[in-house]
Image (cartoon, rainbow over all chains, first blue to last red; front, side):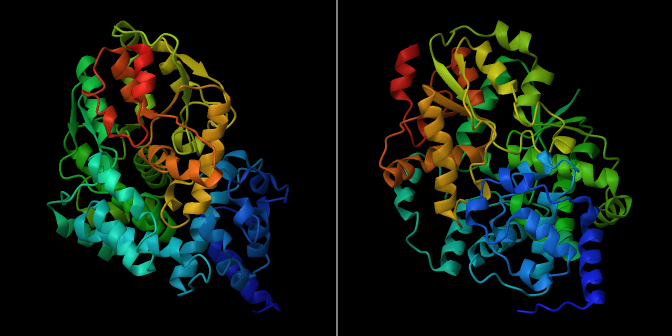
Length: 182
Length: 288
C-alpha cells in the first residue's frame, strides 16, 4: 500500500471527493461525534472521522480499500449529529462510488457490494424488485446457498415470499434511465 | 386534492401486511388514494451506495409520473422509499444541472413541486389526529406499546423535515390515540442494520438484538414500526436473535397501521396480522 503521497495527487483526490459531495473536508475538526454515535463502529477498520481526515490527506488507497465504506449502513446518525453539518454519511456514498468506478473490490466486505449490484440488476431487468429472484441470485453469486434458508418455509407459509412479480410495463424507460446514468 | 400512493416493492412482497392494513384504515378514514401508474423501484440503498445520479433518477421517474397525472401529494408508507423520494426532490431542488439531465432523460415536464409524506406524516397531517381519535371504537387499554422509528423517518432532518431526529414523538402520539400506553426506551432511533440484513447478518442481529432486548426490558407487550425493513429485521430475524443470545424475546412487531386498525375495530384477519413471523395471538387476547 502506498504511503508517500504526492501533493498534487492528494489535492486531486480531495477535490474529486469534495466536488461529488458538494461539501468541504476542512469543515471537519475531528471531534469524533460521528464515530461515537455510529451503530456499526465496532466492525470498522477506520472510524468515520478517520476516513474524513484520511481523505483530506489524499490517502486514496487506504480509504477506498477500507471496510468502513462498505459497513456504513447509511443511518445518517453521524450527519444528523455533526456540529459542523458535514455530510458524513454522504462521504461514504461518494467513496463507495469512486471505489467501484476504479474497479476496487473490497477484500473483506465484497458481499455488501455484491448485494447492491444484484439489487440494481433486478431493478434494471424488472423495474421493480422481485424478492425471490434477488435473494436467489445473491446466494448464487456469494455461494451462501444455505445461509438464511431455514427462514424460507415459514415465510412461504405466511405468504411473505411471492412466486412472481409485477414488472414495470414501460421497461424501455427504465432501460433508458440506466443507459443515461449508469 | 388527489392523493398518490407509492407502494414500493416491499409492500407488494414480504411486507404485504403493511399494505393490507393501510388500505383498511384509509377506507375507514374515508381517504382515497391512487397508486402511481406504472411505478418503479426507488433504487433503495443499493442505488445511493453505488451511483448517486441513478439514486435520484429512479425515484424521479415516479415523482414525474405522479406530477403529470395531476397529483399534489404522495404517500410513501415504506420509510426507505419515502426517504429516497424526498432525497430525490431535495437533490433536484439544489442541483439544477442534475435536474435537467434527469428531466431530459425522462422526456417529461417536471416542476419538483410534489409533497411527499411518510406514513406517520400522512396520518398526522393528512388524516389528522382528531379524525383518527374519533374512529377508535375499541380502545387498546392496558396494552403497552413501544414505537420504533429507526433511521429514515426522521434522518437526515434537513431532508426529512419531520419530527425530532433524536427524540421523535409522532408514532407515540398515534399509539396514545388508540388508548394503548406508549413505552419509553433508549433505542427508538438506533439503526436495525436494514440494508445489510442479507450481506452482514451477524451485524444486523447485534444491532436488532440490542433494540429488541431494550424494548423487552422496558416492559412492552409489542412493538410498532412504520418501515418494512425495520419490520423484517425485528420480526423475521427475532427467532434467530433469541437463539444467538440464548434469551427469549417473544415480542410481536406490528405496523402502526395494524395497531390503528385494531383500535378501529377491524379483526386481526382483516389486517393480515397472521402474516408476521412472531405470533401476536397472546397479546391480542389481552385486548379481546
